[in-house]
Length: 345
Ligand code: GAL
Image 1 (spheres, rainbow, N blue to C red):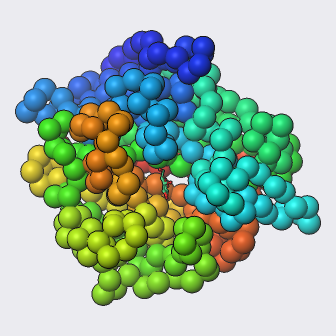
Image 2 (cartoon, rainbow, N blue to C red):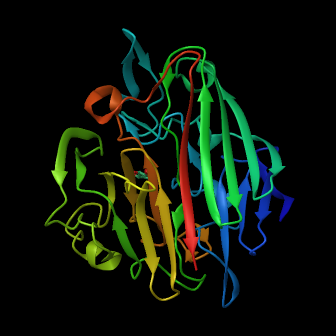
């Protein structure tokens, strides 16, 4: 097992490091100190190794587009209506960075900062430990919140991301990873021939600003039914009469009883697959419908369906829909969320 650190350009004047953790099977992950961004999950293949994550070659191509490629997202992922909520009888106004609403924690969240890094080598795993503290002065959420994000690559080839936080005042915490997948080699242009299976029976109805209305829609008999593996291109074809021309949806999920598996994504052409494990009640599924030319990724110039983001988290906008769950992090409480990914190749 091996850990390497290399320079990866700058955010303004701050130097960014890339850490690469490699296990004894030749599986490796690379993560940036910028945004705790997951750049590579390399698995052995007929080409030597193949990176199954959609990535960009440099900082410019991460920051010149709105797609949150590979970044960690917090304090809360998804959309918060009007960037506003009540907590303990107090009204809180956070940033409105997408029209009236807040998206992915605003512009001063997990996805925008440079994290402090340390590494750890254990008997059967390698870890990258990222730390940063978020304050009300910076991102407008109540409470000073120290956060630790730990990436663990095990000898069984699995990767877990653990998000752990505490706070001195009640606040909100619903983090995720905005990693996009394309399991094909670098010459695979899109994910249309991938198959997707998801343990989801319902998804959320949303309004024109993609804010949940509170209604659930049954997936059965609609293009949202992934209970059995479905070719993504077939499902996306059925979405062509929507504005989105693909999926950007909040799927309610229930993990397998034995291991919390919520998703299996497969690429029949390469024989590779990816399983995602989470104990939270949602996966946001975004098929990169609006990616466009002008950003350079490992699967070519930006274009629709180049990758798929499958973001495990709690259902969005909980302050306005308590029935979706509670993402409050209480004063002096420590909460950890874990998402596990397992590539098979
Ligand atoms: C998704 C969101 C999309 C888009 C994307 C980032 O989580 O649902 O609407 O904002 O993030 O580009």
